[in-house]
Amino acid sequence: TAGWIGSLILPLAFFAVDKGDVSFDYRNYECDFKMSSKTWKWLAPLLCAIILMIPNCIVFATTVNLLMIAKRVARQGRENLKLEGIITATLTASVYCISVFPYAIYRIADQNFKSLRDPQGFFQRHYFRIALSFLFLNTISNFYIYCLTVLSFREFLL
Image (cartoon, rainbow, N blue to C red; front, side, top):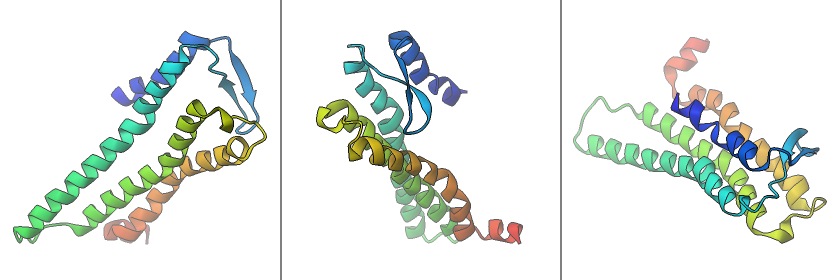
């Protein structure tokens, strides 16, 4: 429930700040808010941190914590340490961070560097589409990560 409520932050911010400032974006074929209000000068970096950076930091920190716990368990000589679960969690977290990173760079750079705002330039035309494509990498890769690392999943498929 918290995830669904959290996903409303950005649309509500758009309607609260610039509800009439909408344009059609042909790069990804959707309506886009222009963010021309002065409020976006401080609100956009804040939302970028909340939506893009904080989840990546949390995923990274919990993955490192998982690896430290696994190392401690392995040092104690326990036999029931499931290496496949650790590898699966680590790969899934890594791919998630890799998939979100280009889009986070786009959003931060687009807000802070006016020289990158040329609509015909590489950054706006090509990098933006590449960054959007990377967002799908996380969803696509999960099937392959599970096939690679989880024996019971492979057996289920066969």
